[in-house]
Image (cartoon, rainbow, N blue to C red; front, side, top):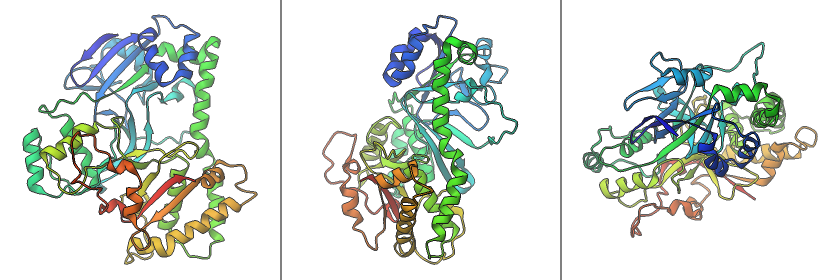
Length: 447
């Protein structure tokens, strides 16, 4: 591929199908097979963009194109090379048709004034985004909000389970690595530390995500060329699959309210929101969290190395949690969610503000959700044949709290919490079972 711009962190390359087709085949063989039948020539250009960990791929306004060492440009910026404007300009108000080629990205809503980040979608190699541009979906009314979601290279809503509380150790780590980041007061700030570590001039880290953007010629052919009908159908199918849950939401809410009305307990809006979010995670519509064990979402080894050898973490393993989508059909390991995390529904008013979360979970959330789930599963008319019923039937959902559960044994049974990417004997370090994350959390696992 031809380098438009490249340095050790960012790159923008221009090329054609033959340049990337082998890589596409390894991450999305179905799409590769469709395109191979068409043999697109050199007039079907593609752009491969490479981003370091923590770099913004796009924000609420548009996607970014790296054009030199210090600058991102938006697709509507005047300084963007004319060739890129001509070939990718159709996506200037949102994004061109894109595909993740290597590593993962996270879409999220950022609320810095509340020190809160809500992950909305994790995308992995082979996944497409902004594919509505090829479907020409123009409706009389538009309900797509602006200025909300961002997308970042790697994980944004990641955090370390042990508390980063020793200021002396933290200052030493920053001095050793050559970074200047304030000591975190909240999990919200952990990502900024991870990003600073991996991007330090004193650290050798080659972690990069890669994204493919398809030029105007691809979009025109998918839209208008009958020979490309199978490709257009491919995008229709993934669009329908992606939007199915949202389109059913209004009817589902009626059925949920009917199920709740059959539960005698008087539930406030906060607890009802917990129930809704629990079902969203079970259905894969909202991410949960897992202990990081691979480099797919962040440069795990680099970050853990810094906390072991520079921060010199004591007692606990530097376990990092990352967002993950639960799939009730084929998830083989549990996914977790903590009610201690700040989220949109955590801002809702609670009827009993003076009651601890552990007490609330034991006395109200756990028994009420059990009855709520039973109402849904036994609702022969409303939920019969739905994925909601199937997902809840196949998923064990445990609300875990210190009052009734030996959380140490629950956590220790998941070997991922013991994972350490740094070679060496660290038998003196244990799983951080006293983390606030475990002081009221939900576990999703297959029956």
